[in-house]
Image (cartoon, rainbow, N blue to C red; front, side, top):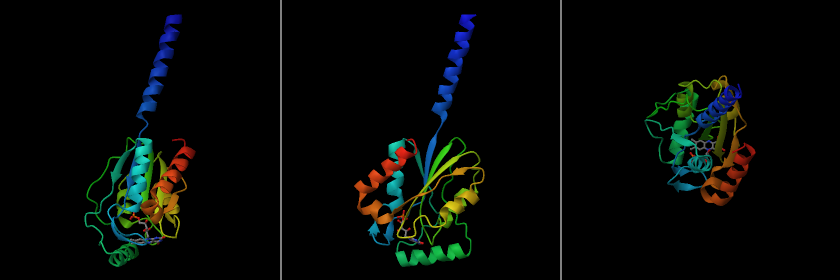
Length: 193
Ligand SMILES: Cc1cc2nc3c(=O)[nH]c(=O)nc-3n(C[C@H](O)[C@H](O)[C@H](O)COP(=O)(O)O)c2cc1C
């Protein structure tokens, strides 16, 4: 009898630790290098810097959303294209997709473009089922904070739990990496990572 109870207990413990091991975290990011506001020409996008820090500190996999047609390298041209896309509610094609079904916690990173997420992220988001997932947004900006992105994500990621986005200026991520890294660590600790 004791043997049976012990076996059941052992099996239960094994099953729950297997579930915990299966809990997977993903970082999805769109970020643009080239010329940007306040930072000049950059080799790595501001949000990408944060995405890499998050993936590094949490051990999560990193997936980059890439538009099939890259945005212009010059800042002024890029803001015109982005504004047009937003006005037209465009859904620009992306190069690659990612199966997100096995991830239960998903960080999603983006620059603020005209107060919202870039349209290529709408393309990715609308192609997936977010039901039951925990979504942790983070963004970079140059004054707007997270803009209206929290409500965009809540309306587009039905059935998920979208947390309040972390918002940091892109120039902090790009030029003051130590301070950016500290902020990211404190934020991640607060989230239980
Ligand atoms: C097309 C475009 C639109 C932008 N719109 C805003 C905006 O509405 N508010 C803001 O604070 N910053 C805005 N910015 C600045 C970016 O959000 C900021 O530079 C960000 O850090 C860029 O991140 P990335 O390098 O990861 O793409 C805009 C930049 C671009 C290129």
